[in-house]
Length: 315
Image 1 (tube, rainbow, N blue to C red):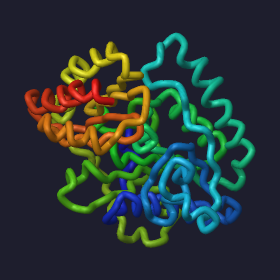
Image 2: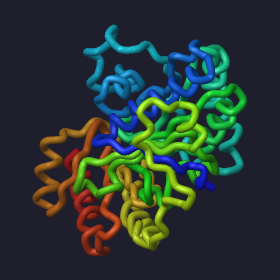
Image 3: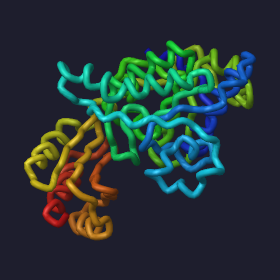
Image 4: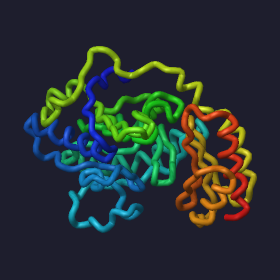
């Protein structure tokens, strides 16, 4: 379904891949004579990196980028989706439309003539609390199509197998116009990112895209990564934690495990306890999460989940 994503512009960091995606979108419309589409629409609680363009679509209230208010391009922000990824199927469509899609539709309809692209994290918001959604993302794609707006998805943390599918956007049954990939490209061994898009985008937004690589053959590898995501082990060992009185929620998607607790944690205290338990886990806010490597053993994964269980009484 994503064979149209044929061309990749390589860079060194994730925030640069987002910057490049935004440049592509602006150049795309400019090349067609539309210079009014100068802004981007995004959702609150999002984080897209530290480069100047990427910072302009980060939520300044919920990030460390508030210092730059007044210096950055003024983009448009909509409330973040509230409905969970795994909400009850019979209720989810109505809830998504009323709570999430309606306010987004109002904003995008108001500003569509000046918006070149919608920039979002795909399926999972990372620094925004590892909140998961997909029916919402499908409706965002539909609204972008209706109003001739490009959809730019950041798969920095979730791309290439992390969610149990090759791309996070596959859960929503959509394909973005531009996707940003980073962490799983080299597993952290090299600084490398890719801004991947369609051949149509490259032709119409030439900028420095002569450096882009295009191919007539699929560039996505077929591997047995899906069997390595250990979802069942994560579920079996994290879901029982819902019974603990301090736990507010447990969310699992592919090789992502999230335990949300009732209050903000003392990061320094918990990290010391994690180390004593033989695990390196970095909580933030009221979130404890793991994104284990695909090749982790069952025993290694149990060390992580047991470490989480062991610290709950100290929160």
